[in-house]
Amino acid sequence: MDALLNAVDLKTVFLASLVEKFIPVLPSYILFPAVGAGASAIDDLVLRCVVAALGSIGGALGWYCVGVAIGEHRVRSLVKRYGKWMFLKTTLYEKMTASYRSNPFLITVLGQLVPTVRIFHALPAGVLRLPLGSFLLATALGAFGWISVLAGAGYAFYLHGWSVSAIGVGILAALATVECAGIVVVLALKRAKRTEA
Image: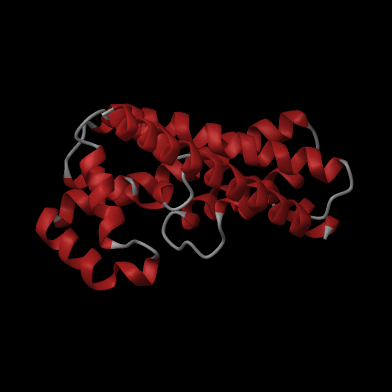
């Protein structure tokens, strides 16, 4: 496994990050810790995070262009017909589209921190023709943040003797715990508002 990790060069990191945006076979919470685990030192880790972020931005730009080229009605029709095969349900697409109408920059940054949303958020952004410059900047900030946390965790755990598969399982468990805690907090806040009303 060590030899395999060391064989992963920057070109492979870029391509894996790019492909991850189009073919969600290898989840980011496994891919990016593995990218970090393969780093030889901190400077190599930072460089890998930058290159992975560039690949992620490239993938987002691809989805953005698809949204612009195909247009709202055809995208909605394709999502309804084929979205389930790519883990993009119609309800998720509609929620992403609606969320962009309030604060597109912040939504784009935060969208990079949500595993499934980070893959497809650029599609409705392209359909809505959000300003490309600010969209790419927000994508870069969110992608670099997400990738750095996961790759940094992979690097740190690998130095402490964890295997790549154990790191992936551990990070998945941590993400699931955070998500469940978030849901509990949101439900509690909604209940408190109802009680006040």
